[in-house]
Amino acid sequence: MSGHDASGHLHVSAESKAPYAADVLATLRQDAAAVIARYPVKRSALLPLLHLVQSVDGYVTGRGIELCAELLDLSTAEVSGVATFYTQYKRHPNGDYTLGVCTNTLCAIMGGDAIWDAVSEHLGVGHDETTADGKVTLERIECNAACDYAPVVMTNWEFFDNQTPDSVIRLADDLRAGKDVRPTRGPDKVCTFKEVSRVLAGFSDGRADEGPAAGPASLLGLKIAHEHGWAAPQPPAADPAPTAPAAPAAPAAPTKGASK
Image 1 (cartoon, one colour):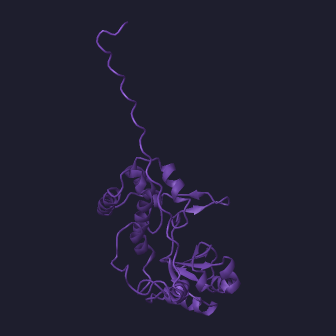
Image 2 (tube, rainbow, N blue to C red):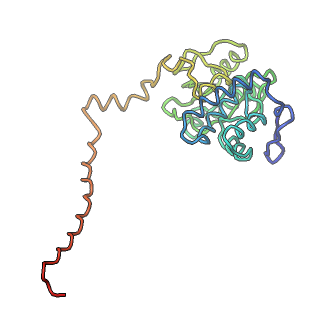
Image 3 (cartoon, rainbow, N blue to C red):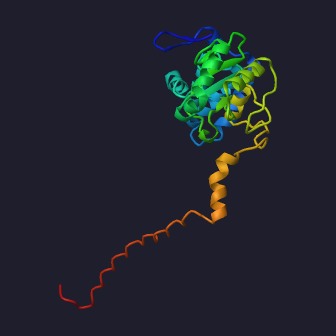
């Protein structure tokens, strides 16, 4: 496992740097080659490759960092710098389900703080901590971009709208019990952290069109605009393309017999 010291610095354990099994490594390299081929510059593939590592290890391991560095001709420091910048990359073992509670301004006012307090006490864990059974990692989220359904929680980045402390506790219990859980919008059920990491690496699971997408609250402005015949103004006409300056006229040829 990996952990952090009191300053928050990551310590990668020997366990997370143990070599991949030969068959696992072969599959990883094959998938990584498909990812890298999408980009004209291979270092641009780092973000999806980190998700690919998570889809196998469940978090960004030391061996995963070394593999990304090798495949992309980067230093391990460069890879670690990216892996420690984005919160979707986990630098220590993560639960099968990441339960994110929005406690930003609107969700907090609408009940997000109460949800956090209730579910944190119920699970016995705090921010970025995982239940003893390895099922649920709890997180505070800074705005899920779904303020029209506040308070909102996310499970592996799928939306659960208009939540209450009791509904989120039931959600957490269902996740720990291994029950299929359906989000308010999106796919028919929430997939595991490893499964969603593979999707984020760019490998479709064939479920992109399942379930409802935007709900009535999100579409209300569009509905009102249609009812009133409102439309966005047309963009201004493009300026005509500049014309190249005319080439200077060639000097006249000297006439025969002209004086020098």
